[in-house]
Image (cartoon, rainbow, N blue to C red; front, side, top):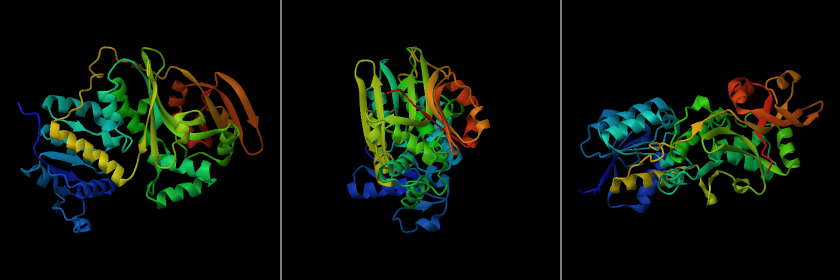
Length: 398
C-alpha cells in the first residue's frame, strides 16, 4: 500500500492575512509537489490580481477533480464549519486555521474524520508558528503530563508588553496594536480572552484527551484593566499576562481557565514580549519545557499551515491517543486559588465570596483584595464580573 501523496493541489477558502501569507510562502519556496489549484473568496473583484484562479462559489472547489486537499482560512465560524464538514464527508483531507470553529465542533469533526479515514489538521490554529499540537501528539503521548499553560494570544501580549516596557497607557497600546494589524477594529476576541480560550480547548484535547466546551471554562480578559492594576503589579515586581492554563489538580482531575495572571520574574513567560507566544509544558519527570515563537502574522501562521499541508504528502493524521485512553482526567471547577480583585464600588465587593482574605486596601479612587476564591463561583458569575467595574487576576504565590 502506498502511504504517500505525489502531488497536493489545494482548494483554498479565504485570502485574508493568513491566506496571502501562505501564498507568499509558497511563492518563495516554490515546492515541486504543492500548488494552489483554486481560491474561493466572497468578493472576487477584490482579488483579481493575486495570480490564482478565483471563484466565489464553494461548489467550484468541491467539484474540481484536480483538488485533493482543502485549506480553510476564513473568519466566519459557521461557514468554516460547513466547508470543513462537507470536505471531510467527501473524503477530502482538510487543513483549517479557524480556532473558534474547531473549539465549538471538535468532537463532531474528529468523529467524521475517523469514520471517513481522512485527515483534519490544524496546528496553525493554536499559537501560530509554534508546533504545539504536533508535539503534544507525537512526543508527550503518555500519562506523565501535568500542565500546559502559557501566552496563546499575540495581540493582548503586544498590548501588555507596551504597557509594562514602554509605560504606554492601555488605550494607546491598544490603538497601536490595531494600527499595526495585531488587533482587530473590534478587539474583543483578543483582549476578552476568547481567542486564548479557543486555542486552549484545542490544545487540551491533544494534551489530555478530553473535550471541554467553551461555556464550562472561566474566561476573563484585560478590557477592565486600569492604571491602578498595572501599578499593583509593578509594586509586587510582577507583570500582568493573559494566560491559558490546563493543569491537573491531582492525578484524576483537570482544571482549565483563561485569565490575567500576575507573573513573577522567575517564570518563563514573564519575558515573552510583543506578539510572541510562549507555551510551558510540565511533566512528572522532565519538569518543564518551553516553546516560544510568533503567535500572529500572515507569514508565521502561513508557514504553520504549509507544515500541515506538506504532512499530507505522507498521509499524516492526528491519532488522538489520549482521547482513546481509559485514563483520561475528569474536568472540574471545584477548587480554590488566590486572586487579586480590584473594585471601585462597594457593591462590587459582594459579587464574589472570598474563602479567606490575605490583604485589603481602600482609598478614594480604588480598592482591592488579595484572597482565595473558588473557580466554580467565578464561572457562575462570569458574565456579571465581565460587565462590572472590576478587574481580577490569578495571583500565584511564586
